[in-house]
Length: 440
Image (cartoon, rainbow, N blue to C red; front, side, top):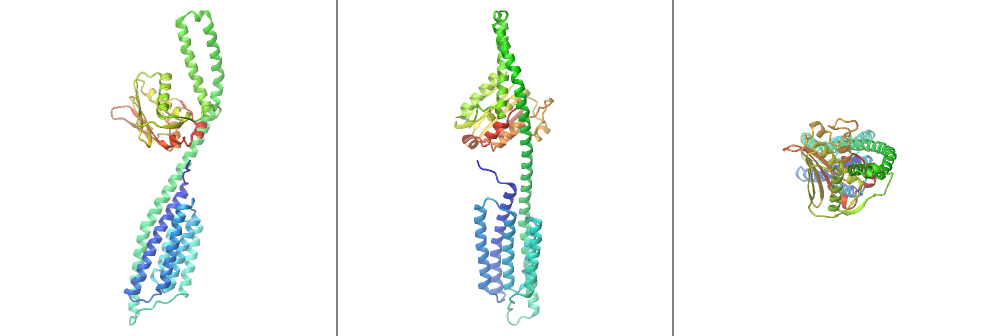
């Protein structure tokens, strides 16, 4: 199973890609600026040395591209080293072209702004110290620019102002573009972390529910077995055996007891107490038809509409969680609309859509907003509202999503969309779900 990347690692990887793009722009901009100043403005620059620094930046960027594709985790320290490389390259270029007198020295502020939104506090202050030391060093150690013959201080000052303007435009444009993208990456990271915390809380809640259900199932096992023995004795008693009507009622009671025992067994199985029914290989149509047939036999709905599997049939790996997931949604629809329940199952080749609709009053706006959260229900009973909560967790662990809406002609519709690969190669969360999932 492929494990999803941590939101912080994903944000760092995206930010590294942004730094790579920025470095490509910086390399192209440096080449253009060097050639422009040297050949058009006539300022003599050490072309070989400055182009060698650009070549160094290109090599570093190629290594960074390789890291972004091969390395699993990108840390904040890695981003700090990337920025240090850019600071070093900028310092070398300024050393070769006038030092602190070069108007492009203010590009150090661009590196600091990037560090401010990318790095931790210690790394930002380290970057402040390093760039300040580079600035001080460039004040005393640099190669002077050789101005064209015949140009005095006025021409130099005008050229300096033009360079400052270009530096400002370049820094402002890059900050507006890249800092905005970095902020979006950081917001996506924060949203991902919040979702992970929410999932952790929900999974802990499911574990507590599983423990309670397991304990209740154990407690129910003894009285159900006692009632089964009593019913068997009654069937053999002459007073009941010779009364067809009474025997029919006893048979109905036995059927309901068997159903209760099956529910208790499924709860124990889902809680990890019993493992007689693990994951099984079957075909999609067989699983759907068997599940629907079992639900119809146990619930006996007045009007149920199901036309069979739409789309191609295929082999799948299924477990108790998938069956119970379908039962929960169908039970909710039957309780909301005893007069009509519709089921549609469609295989698009890549996704499996299970759609259950009814003719009931539909969902309230509050219910639709709280879809998948525990204890949100219109039934008004203590402990209700867990069905869709557990269904949403199973669907999410399989890599799918759960949707619900009210139909224009009346009634509600719940749609479960699952990636077919999760069923073809076995539900990735089947073992965990088999230990946790249950519900009525």
